[in-house]
Length: 224
Image 1: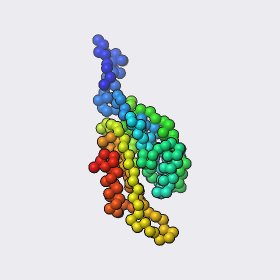
Image 2: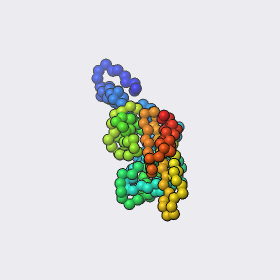
Image 3: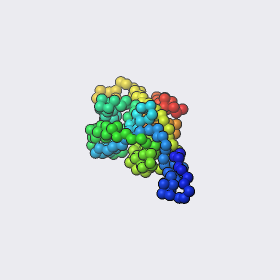
Image 4: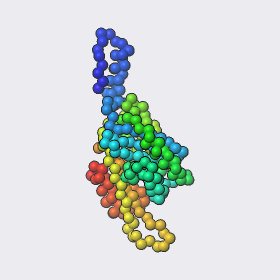
């Protein structure tokens, strides 16, 4: 809470202090943000990069084109090579059926990683809101990984740390007919503090081994 002197009569300075105190009370300001955040867009891709006090990264990108497993792996490999972001820390979400544009994804992610500023993260209504310390809306992240650059709302403060986990589930029948693609599933979880977790499953879902992988990645990010 900021310190505000108490002059003998109301002044603009005192009124400003009252306004700041009200913002703290409403949950719009945080004195000591736990996170840094960077946002960027390139073509049909929006990206959010978050970093906690320990330097742990989580990167979220929403793309407006088809996103196959092989394309996700290609983008992840390019991001790892260019920026050193581990696969478990990169979550890709597709909201479109357009032609793939992996270069846009890599460019947006790189720009977000280069735009870190102090940020406040709050959880409410099934999403987290990322704002600047003065309450300016920067991004909103849904539990399925969908990203928007508006719609911020009040909520419970989310404290560090970030935890990430990623697991590949091999196909149940590895011997596929010649020419038929090998199908596998990937399970990913990114937790922000204790209040919010993004969980995604790509590929086949109706398999006991996928369910077991979901439990395992959730346990690794502190969720039972």
